[in-house]
Picture (cartoon, rainbow, N blue to C red):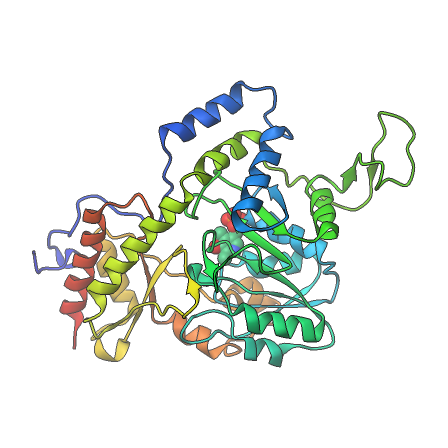
Length: 397
Ligand SMILES: *Cc1c(COP(=O)(O)O)cnc(C)c1O
């Protein structure tokens, strides 16, 4: 292998850039979308209910409400949980901003609890420390696909009367103590963005066993309007409907759900392939002292949305930025997940200070996300491994 780093003018490990994540669309998916386009319904048709039923059955939940994306799913869940002005909701800073933004949409206040330095998931002990008499809910995030500590979170939620809204955007297909993610929290959100486990282009869903939440989520998705006589205050005739709440148009289309139904058939294979690639990575990196590979907690079956390495910066002659740029020059689509949510200027303007979550903040300085998606070939994975070896060997102290 060429020793000169691409960033120093050497030949890159790969000629073509390898993204960190990507969808896998086959001919069957394309046909499903074409069929939906030829059908009578582009939206509010039968494909939506069918997709919802299949998702609920897959994760072991009773009801599912499919919406326009994962962010609107989280917003709808906060609405259904009754989050309003001044209510506090505890979440992790090591996540995409949407996990906290959904609280702000409802006028609530996101409160950040620190992560466990091994699993990178929200630390139940810090959740408990951050509870006040205004706390109404917890939004734990199954970071990278590894399930959160459900037993501990459930115990806290029950003791303090809090609603658990699980942000499982990374965790479709993951399992906790033998149960699928989606059957454990009061409400669980999944995202169908193209980098996630299955895609509808844009899309999201909330799964719940609670009929009251289900009705609120359904109302919220479509302006707060109902035609269900059981929910209306009166009925003036067959044309009649009522707006009961201030909802929005957060609907997903039949075209998207047709794609989702088709993609769902591949989910088990997608997760299996993600696990295979992770096994390759873990084996290849176990003897590189400068790299800390992801820690898998016993009883947690990750569905591996992301593969994140931690750099032991004391053993390297440069910082994360130089390693990142060198890998990128080798045509490896590296990324950083995530910039702690409270670091963003918007959150800083709201008054959140640096230093409130030391473990998450320290982790942020040392992490790099490597490409991981089921369509990657073995050769793609080997290129990633070669590039990591090349760059780390060069910058080893
Ligand atoms: C992707 C993601 C979301 C939002 O999903 P969208 O479908 O992109 O709106 C929310 N939370 C986390 C942790 C995510 O990764």
